[in-house]
Length: 409
Image (cartoon, rainbow, N blue to C red; front, side, top):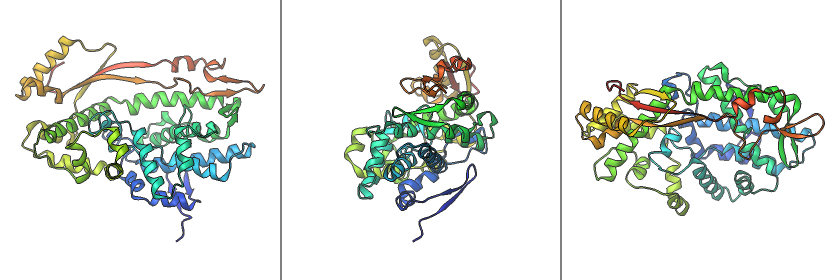
């Protein structure tokens, strides 16, 4: 069988698959599932073109990893063929643990289980299926391999994941403010003392990258309507799970039913390969198919939320600089209970509140390092001609409140 395939990517053009192992991983059902999970969840309710998938992103990130490794090799950095392929696989699988609608399920269907942990477990699962050929990729993914710079290409402030999703999300949403100088950034990468650095000539491309990231968060990832839609979905899944755990009949596919009817922990996944395999079958279609059925459910909370989300009748949302007081929340619960003729305790399904943060550049031990022309390595925030970095480095926090439009705030 010819495994030297080519993907025609709308962002980068032709992407060549030159490794038999990588081709076989891509062909595996657990990876093919990523075709059925949208990269930006419900963001297409705001930007109709945002229909690209986790599959798109994974292939694109691997392509950028290939280009970065080729660039580093051209500068004399020692990267063996085994390390080269392992790094490609590590970035290819870095997001394989994402569930339907990404982060929304971390707060509802799988409470407290982060997708990074599931990515690692799915990588271990695939490793067992491919005769332990992913051992080095697992070490790079976990940052336990001796060449730490390979992990930085997978996960850091300037990794191939971020470079691809900014470029790709900007392309598919049509938000031009997210455009970055990808070619120049990759060509300016180098390695000093086992750390990824950016040569000084790439300074302004990095500044543009950080600024683009900040703008994309406000305009896309934290767009008010996107936040509202996600919180509605979280509440909807929580209601379905509460009903299922309470013994009520709730329609679901076999994969979805597994997680609706039982509270799974990370330890459950770690101890049960069948459970991780079941999770590897869960995708957006399971959720949408269930929601279409749930709109006719006898439980009026579940049916109401399902109908509203299907018809894009989203919560209104208010962003403030200060959190809500207990009295304000109490008043809101009473209004919702009265409007929907439900008990006060059930009002929680019809509103959401919390905080959102925009962290364009927070070093936290993973700073972006600049290699000056004199050979000195400094944090980009110390670069004297980049005054904007100090502003970008500050965490911007806002508090949100989402609730039905017929409830006055």
